[in-house]
Amino acid sequence: MPIIIVEGGQMTSIQKKELISKMTQLASEVMQIPPDFFMFTIKELPDENIGIGGKTIDIIKENYNKQT
Image (cartoon, rainbow, N blue to C red; front, side):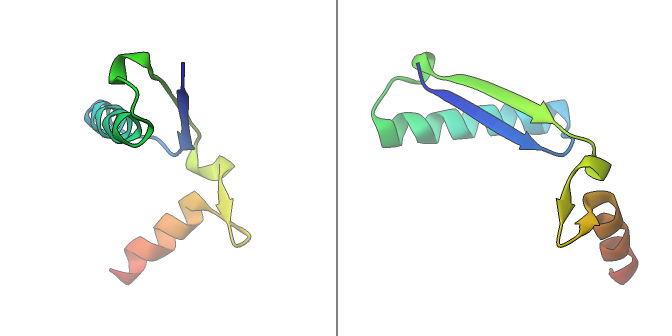
């Protein structure tokens, strides 16, 4: 049974459902395995627990929002 694990920031219920559906469908097509055989897990991490380029995601988002 293939397992798809996604780790990232928080998502809405609608985003989670769409992500699970689309990624499972794509993996099923690529691997030629029926979608029913896939297990999908989402591990949500708070933005302050994820860093890129030495900055946490919450700071990156804050700076991005100031620019737009």
